[in-house]
Length: 159
Image 1: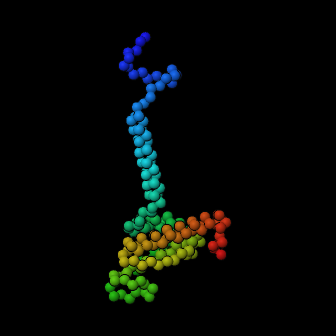
Image 2: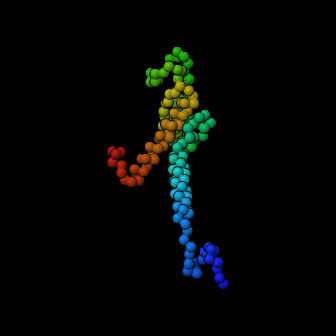
Image 3: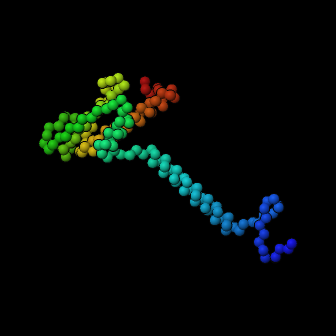
């Protein structure tokens, strides 16, 4: 059996031979691997960052749902709208627009016992709801930090 002189022979490893790939093909393969690795890294960073970012509250129904998750034993809110020229409490922030006051309470495991009571001010109802949810999310984050510190027996900062 004879092989023509110009024929390309690719042999398997079993036969003991191999055909070297041209340098440009190797370069193309290496570049494709680098591009895919960079794409995977970017996707990973995006998903990780997206997971940490919490969606802002933009309406009363979303606020209701989020506060229900953040306050497992219940919560209550009262909104007070102040019109132009209406007397506002002394602790109200200065504002050029009518203010919205939102007082909210988080209840404890014990029925009727208030664990947290806060007041937030904003120029609109939506902003007041957003401030309330952000306030509670901050509390949850601080609680998680305290629990992590307590587990590490590093509570000297708490004294």
